[in-house]
Image 1 (cartoon, rainbow, N blue to C red):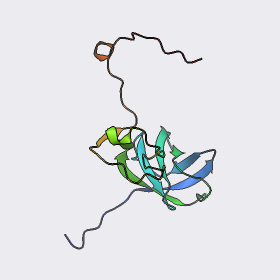
Image 2 (cartoon, rainbow, N blue to C red; image 1 turned 45 degrees about the vertical axis):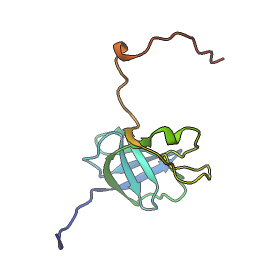
Image 3 (cartoon, rainbow, N blue to C red; image 1 turned 180 degrees about the horizontal axis):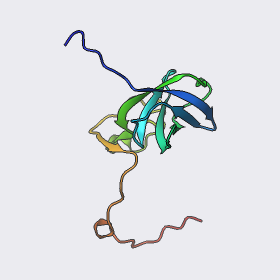
Length: 132
């Protein structure tokens, strides 16, 4: 409907460095939720503290400055998966970076963090994997 206003919850960058940003003001944000910075870089909320949250950056931190705003996306971090992803090189957001064009085929959206299946549902280990 025309004239409707959509409110966004935004926070402020307190500190940024080493791929982590501290954000104040996102009181309703969830763990593993994606947030977006002013320059378009996305991040995943990991540490929920009383007065700020810790965000792992999924892009370069050079363009992010203290005092800038950060907005919630209200989406839990996820990636599209499917057979078309096999043999491809993707970035942290699942976007192709190998120059072979878009990923095709049927895709399923899966959360980045999810509970492992119970022991009963797992296949037994028949051959050990040597890791060095």
